[in-house]
Image 1 (tube, helix red, strand yellow):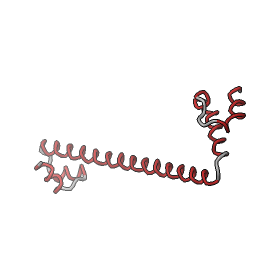
Image 2: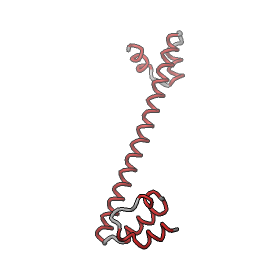
Image 3: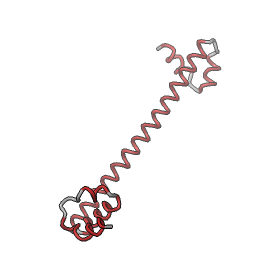
Image 4: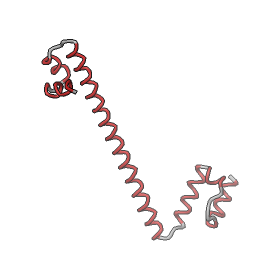
Length: 115
């Protein structure tokens, strides 16, 4: 409670928040709100733009990460199917059966076996 009263009285005088206040989640949020309230209209507009830009960057990064993850899963599944198909062919299973079982086109299987 003492920190809260101290912050409330003197927040406008700080160039940087004292460590004890920065480390406290609630007091840090209160100090941030007070700093925002003391900004000029131009500073608030710049702050809003910076926050929107940061949010857009985070959304873009998250999308790129999830797309990469999906592509990685698809690639892994394809490699596993190819490996299974190769093994079936080595065991003498007819090509037609392997194509039906794996869904991999015959041309791709033939090309894969050449490598």
